[in-house]
Structures are given as structure tokens and as C-alpha cells.
Length: 331
Image 1: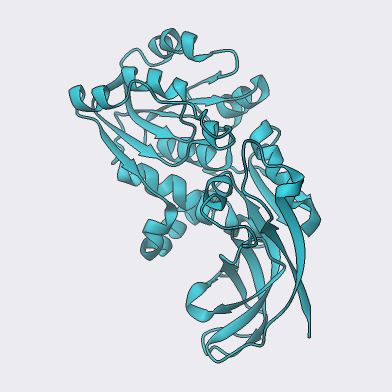
Image 2: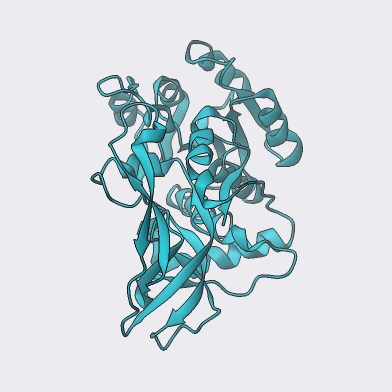
């Protein structure tokens, strides 16, 4: 029987994931039944959310995630051998999936890399798109996004600019701040490692003197408390992630201390969401995102690691700040 490989959760994370918490395991690829397809992964997505989702799994489970794959065997009428698809089978080289669990990827123009199907033209771009849609952004809005040089944040800022908003972003290095302003067109940006929470109030007063209308939250922690003090009446918030506390040791999670009071007195609307809430609108988002990418209106940056065994090092780079843009594994 043919073999595949998968990364499994060997032990629950406590603090920063350790190499011993994850393990590569070989498995026998099961037979394909009616209504199923066998796929071989070409690219795997590496994202911060996987750290949080893994906590809901039990040791021995496959690490969660998505990938671009090709169909190598099909017993489903709507897929044929050679089709390119998106799967959510996790960190795997191969998977047998029900036809309804995978999505066909339409042919991309030659100049568009196929890996974008798990990036700007996939869940990453859709997360940015639908988060801003939840906030009902208007051209008069000032939008603030943290982790702005990351895969999601960079798309958030560019979409908001396309909608006519003033956009402010924060990132973890001067090089990333420069990238946001010079290449992606952010109006303002700052380095959160030098503009620490105790200095953030003055920075926001300078960069957003009229306040913040939309806050796209990727980080959480004490800095977010300061943002809530600067948000305008009837402000809107999309909560996509809390990367600041994903690796906090048990019992020491950073808190957003000034939260509920600001929601009440400023009549703030806050939306927690995942992209899975919007899969029925997938085609709508990808059509608009694809048009922007093809027109050069949305730029993207990928950091590609080669080989299935590089998953752990790529995953860890997400939390060290070493990544630049979307992190992808090429198998």
C-alpha cells in the first residue's frame, strides 16, 4: 500500500512550540471510495491560527491546515485526475477526501503563482476581505491594522486603501514599516517594538488625530487596550487573531484590560470571525481579489520553504517575526 506523511501533534503546546511537540509520521494511504478523491499536496499554508487551533486537538491528531494539491485518483464525478484543488486536510503529503470537502482551483494566468490559492487568492485574502466587509468600511474611515506586514494584515491595508480609507499599520521592524509605506501604500506605519504600549497613545494621537473608525485586530494584548481608548464613537472592530498570546505559558496570557467599558460608552461593534463563516461567499471574494491582483492593485510577498520536513522551522518563524509576507511550504 502506498505511503504518505503527516505532521501530528505529539504533545500540547505550553508556551512556544517545541520540536518535540510535533512529529512526522508515515501512514498508509487508504483506498478511494465512491464520492472521494486522492490528492497529493503541492503547497502547504503556514499560519498563526494553527497554534490556537492545535490546542483543540488531542495528541496524535494531524496538525490543522490547508494546501494546494493535485488530484491523483478520483471516484467523484466532479473531479478528474490532474485537477488542482484546495484541501483542508492539515499538514499532509497525501489525503483521501470527500468531494464536498475540497474546492476546485480555476486555472491561474501564467504570471500568477499557484501558491496564491492559499494566500492572497485563498483563505488569507478572504480573511482580510470579509473582515473589512463585516466592518462596513467607508471611504471616510480611518483604518488601523496590527501585524500589518503579515499575510492577512498586508491585504487588509491594501483593500482599505482601494476603498479610499486612511490606513495605519504596525509591524515589528523598520524594514517592514518601510515596506508598508513605500510598497503597499499605507498612509502611516510604526514599529510596535519601539512604540511600546506606554507610548502608543501619543503615537495614535499623532497618526490618527481624528481617531480610528475601524480596527482590524490580529494581535491582542496590552497594546489593543490603548487602541480601544482611541477608537471613535460607533467604531467597528474585526477580531481575526491574537498572536501576542498564542505562545504565552499557561496562566500568563496578556490581557486587553480596557475593553468592555469602551465598547459601552463608544457604542463599538466588535465581530469575532473565521474565514470558514464565509465559504458560501468564496466566489464573490475571489473574483474581486483576483481582479485586483491581476491589475497590480494588490501586491503580495511570499516566503517559501522547501520540503515537507521544513514545516516546524517555518511555523516557528511566524512567532519570531522572521517571516515576510505569506509563509508557504513547497513540497
